Image (tube, rainbow, N blue to C red):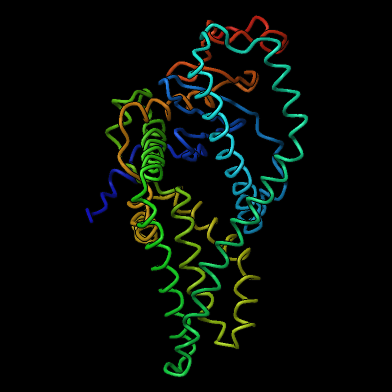
Length: 358
């Protein structure tokens, strides 16, 4: 595995920001100060965008440790929602392009009403799907990466007497299990493409934080690894869990499972604070602390092509706008602006007279 080039990850003259993102199906979600933007590339090669203003910031997001738990839960929910949206919109756009609907048709007043009615009719079921998906995802993660390791290592109880060593073995096994899982799914074509978009997200944020114009050529020169990545957060979670559980002895299996589940919020909160610290500093201590997460990112990010970088740039540009900019949805340019000739948003008073090329 290639060595980590810290100079290209902790860039000396870069200005860290709060911009973040997430790879989705055939696209990227970027999150700015006051809004998110999801951009996906359709089967026909066009870019489709949807922006949404962020809800008012909860006071819990300002309390150390607690904010880590709050952000973890809200990010999990919004991430699942964004993934489901990208799958849904890709299916709709694929059918639209297959039917060869003229691009100028865009979104008519009738189409907008139909979408609204469908959202109203399917709002509850979609919400239930999101909740079910999040609960299922949490249950799978807890089951596979929390319960399974401690159950497996329980068989070593008669061979290893030291409780600290037993906990360390469990922690190492948990990390190894997670790495094997990531390595295995990265062989799947769709997952590899998603990891390429993940790399595009990081390259584009590096480019922006370095003060360069957002172009594919500029973004391409940067690393796919970033110190504030959520993958690093997951690695922090597992390392902190390893250290914390090592101090809690080796009680019976039921108590161990219960304590590991109960301490998940504490571990998530501590991991988030560590990630924030790592994202704001370029000291050698932080660099050493970041190594496990950066190594894991080598599995979860792949080098993107120019088209994937265009998607990331369009999503980032769409959140770097004045606060009074209206929300948009439709086909866009490679810098995140709606194409007026392809999006006739009749009846949307907020967009009346809006300069799509500004």
